[in-house]
Image 1 (cartoon, rainbow, N blue to C red):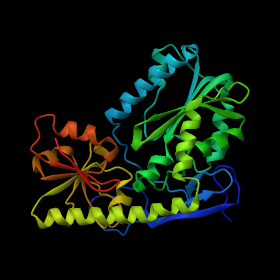
Image 2 (cartoon, rainbow, N blue to C red):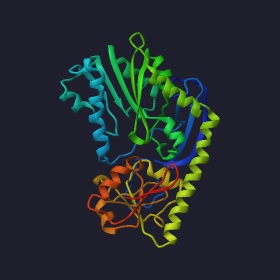
Image 3 (spheres, rainbow, N blue to C red):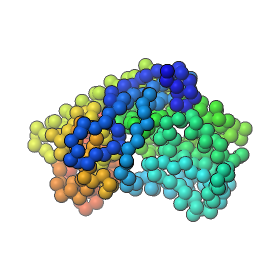
Image 4 (tube, one colour):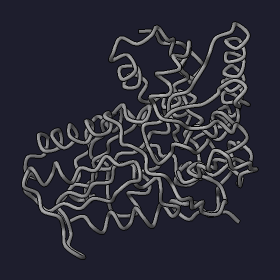
Length: 372
């Protein structure tokens, strides 16, 4: 029996099966021969609360090398705090509490600069923040309850999460990975919020991680939902992301894009072009594994995080991870941008000194080139 991670219902059905995949954050030493541990990776839909989630799988715990937080993420945290305090000036200088995320993006320093104070043990907060944290909680419903319990009467809970809608329509299948336990729609979050006495008051669409939502919630007695909520709910309904047949089509789209990436890299190899990668994100094992891309097509990739240097992408691809300077020294004809959600930042970084005329290949939703 499978219980929903959001509402505990047993009416949960499988919709997408990506097979056995390596633990996403386990980056072995480059000379480790493998095979690496693999675990089932599938999406299930709850027919009651509509939460899309990982199926039954044991918690995957890896010694994750700390990633370097992107400039995009740091700038987003600063601008988000400014926007919230502009829209809700009564929160300036209030009591805050933040549920942290492995992705970084903390708001606390910016809130402290605005005069806010961190809530003490057990103290309720006027502003509760969760930026991409809830997705890392296997028991999503119980973790949501903790966030609701932290909220003071009249307070505001701000939650940001990668949105299921762009994942689905943008074929972002590589964001499905162990450690990301839920794939949230506004509808599902609204349903689980209601179980905890909260209501979504407004929502903003933001560009982070390929498309996220920033959702503002209050206790139901205090909430005054605006039109932004209905707009997003209508978009979700039109795309069918609470429909198991529609969701199942993601499997075919993923297979097609994976095959197209393999064909594109094979074409470049046949033409004598050197292709190297940029980035070693936790989504790379699924992308490269499903695309059957190994060192024959991608000699190595690079990453800004020193903790990942000398390691490799887990799974069958065996692609080593090296410092960024090695990419610049090699001057490849094509750079495969594995951190596709910050492609503009990557290109700007590599082109800062004039570049060398490389073509930048973005793998999703279908492989396509960006030039500078």
